[in-house]
Structure formats: C-alpha cells, structure tokens
Length: 479
Ligand code: FAD
Ligand code: AMP
Image (cartoon, rainbow, N blue to C red; front, side, top):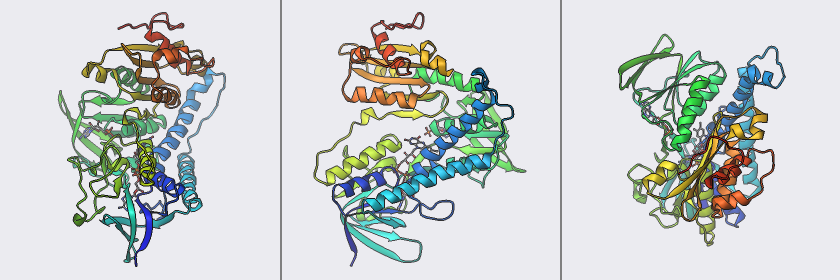
C-alpha cells in the first residue's frame, strides 16, 4: 500500500519548501520530495536558491565587495589597511558554510513542522500519485489528495559554448572557481551575468560581458539602465552590447570565443567563460505522458492565476511556471497554494513583485517602468532624487544613483519605484509596502522619514513629483 499524505510537494526550493511548511502549519500531513545533492553527495534542501543561487552569490558579492573596499575605499574614511591579501579558499569556505547553515535550517524547519522529507527524483504518475526514485534501484509510490509541483529551473545551455570542466561553466561553476581568472568572459549581461561578473572583477579579473541584445537591462527602467551601464563601465566591466556569441573552443586551457556584432565578426580570448544566458523550467522526467499535464508554449507548466494546473488537485509554483524567476515570487505562490488547498481564500499580486540586482550600486524596482507606462499610454508624473544630494549617502561615500517615483498623472497613485544606489534592495521594500497599500506620491510626501537616512531619497523623490523636493537645485525634471 502506498503511503498516504494530504499534500505532496515535489521540489524543496524556496517555492516548494515554503509551500510544505505552510501546508504543515495548516494541519495537513505533508511530504516533500527533493533530489538535490551537495558537493559531498549529501541531500541538501533549499533548491537552487540556497545551494547555487541567491545565497552563495550574495555571500560572494558581500565578500568580494569587502575585499575591493579594503583595497582603496577605506582610505577615504581615514582608515589605512596596509597589505590587503585575498584568501579565495577562505572566501569560498565561508560561502559554503553560509549555504550549509541555511540548508540545515530548512531540514530543521521540516522536522519541527512534522514534514516527511523524501530524498530522490519525484515523478507525477497520476493526479494523486508521485513515484520516488532514490537512486538505489528502488522506486516507491506515495499518494495524496493534493500535489504541488515545484521543481524549479536549470541554466540554459547553448551550442555556441558547451560547458567544459572548470573552463566553460554555468552559474554554479562560476560560484566555485578555485582561482581568480586573469581574463573572464561572461555570455549574457542579465542579472546573473552582471552579479557574477562583478564578483570576479572585484577579485581582480578583467571581465568582458557579451550580450546579444542592443539594449542594456531591457526589463529595468531605461533611465536606470543607462546610468547603471555608465557606472559598471566606469568600474571596469567591459560590457559589449549587440554581441552575439556564435562559437567557442578551448585551446591550451584558454577559451577562444567567436562573436558577431554590427561591425562584423570578432574573437576574444579568455581564461574562463561563464554562460549566463537564462534559465529553463525543470520538466524533464517530472511527469508521465499518461497524466496529461499541460505545458505552455514555452515549456513551463501551464497554470491559472492561482497556480492550478489542468489536472484537478495538482498545482505548480516557482520557476517552473510563468512570471519572474525569483525566489520570493515562488515562496508567495507556495503560501497561496497551501492556503487554497486548506480551503482558504488566497491570491497574490503579480504586479508588485520587487526585482533586485545586487551589483554595486544595487538596482531595485517594483511596479511599472517609464517605458512600459509610455507604451501603455498611461499618463504619469515622475519624481527623481539623486543620492548625491542625500546626507546619509554622502556620509557613506555612496553617492551614485537616484530614486525615481512614477505616479499616475490624475490619481497620483504610485505606479512604479526605481532605485539605483546604496541599500536599494532594502529601500524597495518601503516602496513595495506603500504600493501594496495603494499609496499616492502625496502619501509618501506627507510621511516623516528619519534623518539622515537613505530612505529620505524616497521621500524627496515623492516630493519631486510635485516639484517640491527640498534638497534639489538642479536635477529637476518635470513632465
Ligand atoms: P529551485 O530553487 O530551482 O528548487 C527546485 C528544487 O527541486 C531543487 O532542489 C531541484 O533539485 C528539485 N527538483 C527538481 N525536479 C525534481 C524532481 N523531479 N524530483 C525531486 N526534486 C526535484 N532569485 C532571487 O529572488 N534573488 C536572487 O538574488 C537570486 N539570485 C540568483 C543567483 C543565481 C546565481 C541563480 C542561478 C539564481 C538566482 N535567483 C535569485 C533565482 C532563484 O534561485 C530562483 O528563482 C529560485 O530558486 C526558484 O525557486 P524554485 O523553488 O521554483 O526552484
Ligand atoms: P537573463 O535571462 O536575464 O539571465 O539574461 C540572459 C541574457 O543572455 C539575455 O540578455 C540574452 O540576450 C543573452 N544571450 C542569450 N544568448 C546569447 C548569445 N549567444 N550571445 C550573447 N548573449 C546571449
């Protein structure tokens, strides 16, 4: 007899593990099946996010930033550090420790919530059954009245640059180099390419990013994208736009990359190459054809607004379904689905999912970009405030960037907030809360913000929508 649960979750990334915990909190007997193995071949919960994504990349971004700041920036503060030395092995060990503590933390949360954790590859064999292949030749079937599929995504591979050992790597390999490449190529100047490129540039690599699109950071507000491109270029990232990689080959431990741009064909020689051209949903071997689970035209599991698949009782969440491939989007979907299964009302607002790029300066936004509002013919007013005019930013020595607020021209409702600058990832939470509550720019303008804080940038940008920012003399823009 197959073991029975109320809910089975396939995948223990930020979508799946959060769904499993919420199901257990709501009193459901829950199992979670996950196949991830860590570097030592041990099962590790947390999916891509904890093991090879958000967390290790942020650990290395933090460490590499400290290293770069120690090389020069602290002298501005009157702190002289005589001989700064990079210990890459220690930096990597710290990153691995941060990851291990967090993945073990999920295992503890599973135990505390009475969740049955099953290691192995899960496959949907009917709307009520999942088979588990633990790799020991034994396959077992478990059953539940509800199943949540959260298998996540994997890096896209391209024929032009097949992965090869530690020379041509994907994002996972790029988190584990054992020495700093002298010259590093990155294919794709998206969020992951920029973050990983930044880590290795700070640690000493000459970094060339080859990006097929002519426009930089198309999904971001283009005013932010323009300033960011200038800032990253100033830092030394060699970002080549309109550069499509057509081929590569390894010669004596180095990679020759062929690419094409408007000027013709080119060749670039690098010591290591990172392929960061996007991610694709993990649906291989996830379900049998007999289940009839429907995918959409791009290969994602087809779901409605509340993550229901075409099979009754089967839901799908996270990177494997439409929407931004972000951890917090999947986690919110996990909570929503758990509550729906428990018979509660639940929904989520896909228009208010913040995005962050953890470069230096950070870039973060929520809601609409200016170009989207123009394309949709929405009348709007913009308020902008530069961090150069913010006291706290000056004290920090972090004056690049600005806050921009876009508000409806008639209702004044805030439609989008864009931040490039120090702590943008934290500042965007304030904007997201305001927008979640339907705030107008006037609401933000009437709010008292502590001084001196970076959040005053948000306040001043809101004031600037009315042309009433206090600390701007020049950078005034009116629509
Ligand atoms: P995943 O995290 O991919 O987890 C899915 C899990 O399911 C995995 O453990 C997988 O092994 C397992 N699995 C798959 N198929 C099966 C199966 N059939 N049976 C059993 N188990 C299975 N997002 C952010 O929001 N912020 C960031 O800063 C950020 N940084 C990133 C940096 C990098 C380098 C990368 C690669 C990604 C980053 N992301 C970031 C994206 C984020 O990691 C994903 O959006 C998130 O992990 C998706 O969560 P998920 O639960 O849908 O899937
Ligand atoms: P993202 O999807 O945000 O991770 O970004 C991936 C980026 O890689 C996109 O901006 C793509 O345009 C870019 N890209 C995809 N294929 C190639 C290629 N062959 N050469 C250069 N850039 C590419």
